[in-house]
Length: 320
Image (tube, rainbow, N blue to C red):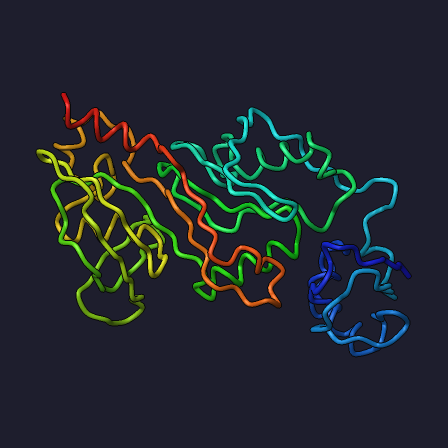
């Protein structure tokens, strides 16, 4: 038998998820059998898989020792290598808003290149707010992601409650995301509705005028801020947030993002000299957040990049 005390990062975590996090190679069938046989208890009482834990709860697991890692040798996360310094735009005790430069990954991939989430964990570790060797059920996490070539704002949770409540804010559309982009020509202003089909094999999407099959609706707001010569500086509001939505939708409208190698105009990309898409997640606006959400203090808050590099890029392009 092993017992655990739920900490702050386990508050409101589903019990089955907690069990999975503290066991090793425990088949789900055996886990649910243990629930049925009353071999998983909370505070001495039988508990169901969907029980939500509270800080301080005692969880007792009457499960064979083979499904627990040895106490003397817990798995230790690898020390992040070559992680860049973190640029923090906003931070409090629950979460931070980080600036992701172009070319930096949000999460690790097969390349082993530096990434934002590991850089954020290293930043918190240096501040003494995170100990990767002591915490084995929660690690700092990103709540939204940007394509590798896109720059801008990324939400990063320091605790599980913050991660949970930021995800609720995003899922319930209580936060508006706005981007700045440079396009080839000026796209039609206003709200545009279409349907997106994602091909996972080549990680490319196709836009359709009408619904069908596995298509997902996309809604994109376009405001043209400036237009000079062959380029336009636009503000894009995402009503939906699908894979490659902005890049593919603007290309479908006939005015692709400058520098976009996947959906863009090759000739204009080459003449501009840009090595990645001119797209920046520039502003986050929080709506009215319910009081039961631990982050309700963000209601009405606007977090933005004051002078993003994309503005300098537009000035350079239009004055050469």
